[in-house]
Image 1 (cartoon, rainbow, N blue to C red):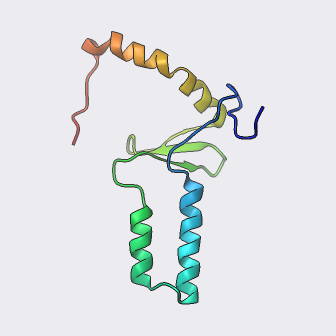
Image 2 (spheres, rainbow, N blue to C red; image 1 turned 180 degrees about the vertical axis):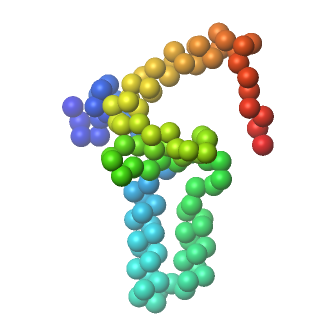
Length: 111
């Protein structure tokens, strides 16, 4: 199985907005501010531009090594890698269930 493959399916596990990229960027910005290469104002703009927009989905690795998805509700949805793989594999079934039960389901108004 390739190193980047998901543990259950063998398919790559792709999550949008990797938290590690944001951490690296924050560290780079802080290093540039410390060395005098960047002003605090420019650093603030760079970090704000990189931050996830309100209402967008993004992922972080939890303290216990699980994947937390933010932006769906007030609290993050946190599952371990194997659980995410099972849920993602079940995605077509969920879509079909939603379609079959559309008339019974309530919809939250988009803001």
